[in-house]
Structure formats: C-alpha cells, structure tokens
Image (cartoon, rainbow, N blue to C red; front, side, top):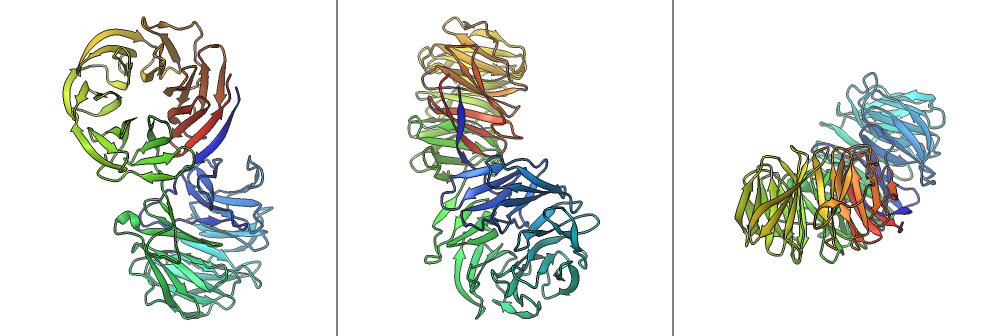
Length: 601
C-alpha cells in the first residue's frame, strides 16, 4: 500500500502576549514563513491551504527568514542555534548549522548578496553576531547595547549597514564589513521592537512599545522625523515597507494597523482589527500586493487597502495541540478541537476554515461527535455542549456532568458520555441515567444496530461492553487487554470492534461474540496507540500513536500493513478519521491537520 501527503492545514503562529513575532517573506513573492513550537511553517500566500513544514529543530523556533536569493531559509531557535536549509528540495537539506549566540534568537537578517547574516536575541555573552552564511566566520560584532536585542536589519544596498533595536530603548547602528558599532539612537522611551530598512535602503523605520515610529536616513542614520504623533496608542509590534518604499504599514497592541505615507509622514488609512484582547496585532508583512498581519489569537489577516473595515481574508485554525476530531455525516466538513477549547471547521476539499463562535468550553476538549445539524462536544470544564453547524456557533444543549468527561458517542437522540466516575446517558438535553464505574473510562463507541456500547477502561485494562435499552445501560461482557485501553470503534458494517491500548497493540474483535478476529497480532507501534478509525467500507483500520506514526491495517489481509512514518514529526498523533476509503485525516500535538491519500493494499 502506498501513501502520500495530500494537504497540510497548517498550525497558526504561536503567539504570546507582549511578544512580537516575525513573519518572513519569500523574495519570489510566493510564500511566507512563521514558527510554532519546533516547526517552521512555509505557506503559500495566494492559497494558505498549501503549506510545508520544516521540523528539524530540537527546540522551539522563534524566527525564519528567506535568503534574498530565495534558495535558502535560515531559522533560529530558543537555544541560539541557526539552521540554514534548502528551499528547493522537498527534503529541505541542511546546508549549515551554527550557534552564534547562547540564548533565544529573536530576529535574523541576510545581506542582499545572501553571503552574510546578522542574528540577534538574548545571548549570555552577547546579544547578536554577524557571520558568513557559508562558513560561520565572524564578520564583525554586535555590541554597544546593554539588554536583549529584539530586531535587526541589513541595509539592502551599499554601503552596508546593520541596525538593531534593543530592550534598552536604543537603536544600534553598525558599519562594515567587518561590522563595527558606530552609534546608538535614543529617540524611543520604551523597548524597540522592530527596525526595518526600506526596499532600496534609503531610509529605515523603527517601532517601539512607546507607540512611536521614527524614520531615519538609511546611510547616515540621521533622524528624518516621527511618523504620526505618536503612531499608535499602544505598543508598536511591527513595521513593513511597501515594495516601492512610499508607504509603511504598522501593527500595534492597540488592536489597529495603520498605513502611512512616508514622504508626508501622515496617516493614509487605519485598519481596526477588533475590540478583544486577542485582536492585538503582533506582526506584519508587506509582500507584493499582500498586506499580512497576525493577531494575538494567531489569526493571519489579509488587509484590504481599498476597504480598511474588513480584511479580504482571515486564516484561522489552531496554534495549540489538537485533541479531538470529527467529520460531518456527509464527510465534507472536518471539525477539530484544541487544548485551549477552540473548535475549527474546515472544508475538506479547499481547506477554507472558520472558528466556532459562542461560549465554548474555554479549556481542553476531550470528546466530539458530529450528527445532522449539530456537533456535540465535552470538555474538562465537566460539561457537554452542542454546536449549531449551520450558524457555526454554540447553541442549544449545555449539560453539567458529574465529573471530567473522557469520551462520548451519539446514537439518534441519545448521547453516551463516559466521565472519570460514571457513564451518563443524555436524552433531550438532560441527563436520563448514569451508571457509576470504578475503572476510569477513556473512550466510548456505540454499535448502531444492536445498541451495544463499548467503553474502554484505563485502570483495569478492559473493554466493557454494555447494552443500551432506551436510556439505561446494562453490563454485558468484558474484553481483557495487557494495557490501559485508549480508544475503540465499531466498524461501519457492524461486523467488528477494534480497540487499541497503551501496550502498543491494536486488537480486532468479530461480532456478535467478540471473538478475536484473527491470530495475527497488530503490534507494530513503538509506543502507546492513541486512536483508531475505520474506513467507510470497513476494510481498513488506521491507528495513530505516541510514536508519531500512523499504521493502516487490512481486515482482508491481516498480515499486511502500511506504516506512515513521522506522520506528525516530533508530535504524537491524537486523532484520526477517514474522509473516504482512500483519504485519511490526522491531527496531532503539533497543531496541524493533515490529509493523506492511501492506495489500497
């Protein structure tokens, strides 16, 4: 059986209050870059559903930038490492790895000939370094500022200059090569968060947490003037130049972005991005005709110069680990829920997405199931809620549960929820019955035809089978495993139950007697199996594991299986589902949703 990755619905940028993030732009104008966790995400600017992910860093990445040639990307991480890797090959071959500073890297800038680079951040012995990209040889030093440096930029024309913005409220100016400290500019009264040269190098702009934006001469670094007075009511997190150098875009914590005329230093237009804390703007990028900004929520906004009231597009999604996944009954819509309680709806064909509105769980979602017109969710706020799929908002049922829910399933008008202490049956929006248990359930699956309910136990390593009659449950039998049960699912054709456990096993039972379906042991995972899912034709089972792999198992040929290695690199698989008999969806701790094409065994 062969497989290929069809789409990656990528994670949003990881944001933090009070921390600017850096977007990188492709000199060819096709893609843009940002980071989340250990990953660097490369996204197509025209169609953000097309994306690629680089996962070779061993700790959290902070910034990634294309070389002006477009052939390489340099990415910097928390430990002070810079990796320079190839953009042309799908494997992104590593060209070089250097350790220019001994702490988090906050910004990277390449010289216009792609030969040199400056990196800045929070090193222990220095806050920045300039070196050759080929060899790592030093070409000067970044000194003269007394606190971590947040931003740096290389002048894109000769004579070469480097400017840096620091938390000591100063801008450092360096001449070279070799680069030597020339002066500091002390016009800001708070942290300097961004310094950027205009595309032709004639000017550079600086932005700070004092809400001010200053313009300087590109060669002499003389102050030309202040833009706005001040530019924003809140801290300015980012500045981006129009490709012709005539306008400047600024992004601020006051929840606005503003467009400025550089010559007159006057406001051209204002983009009010919202009224909530998560609408603070923490980054911006101007690439070709696209003006991108990032909200504190992680949403990526495409601004409309002709209509400042409404972005052309908002790319939504998750930037925290995804914990649950379900499909609409027709399988054309994917629903994902995350560790921070947000639910996102995705068009399975185009990747277009939206976030479910309304009062959700506010914390981790542990169970989710879509039925006609509704999606039911249960979370660790000990409640079961209902989403109206048409209105894309929480509406209707909101039931308080006796303890923390671990899994759920729905049949007709009944919802069966397994909590830490009991199994509850809900009907017509209220709790109809509850059965106390002592084995700490982990998952629930309902057999549509017989009304049997399988519940996995973590304390006793058993699958407990119940008979659901009306709203009451009666215990029927138990199936023993060698490790805590993590997930179970009845097949669509009602012939089988599959269960997986923390002992790395996937076990298939034939109904109605729950006998082992074959003597082949499905045990090729290297760690706990987290989830299982059936293909619609009931011929294939997919399992996802803590070991980052997905395995596809054949019912007709139990000895055969296909392993998708590193399906979510450096991240466990949390949930999987089949869109059709040849397409699999997986989600993981890396916040990405991936679609796989699987050819038959």
